[in-house]
Image (tube, rainbow, N blue to C red; front, top):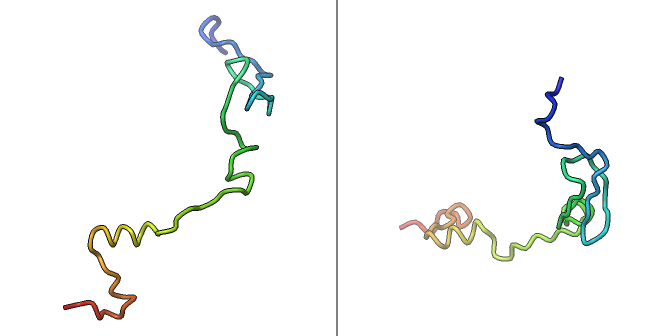
Length: 79
């Protein structure tokens, strides 16, 4: 049983706003929640996600630290 007077007020119908529009209703300790991103406009959930990796992280790392890919060249780069 919860102790009286120590818990925050619970709002079972708290409204979640994104760009000034109500996007959903949830339970919260605040009556209104203002968010920038939610599942309805996040690129991962909407399918508009773009992966931009034109150079390639692994290749960039190897070039930065002087590592060569000996397996791809058949080991011809060894001295």
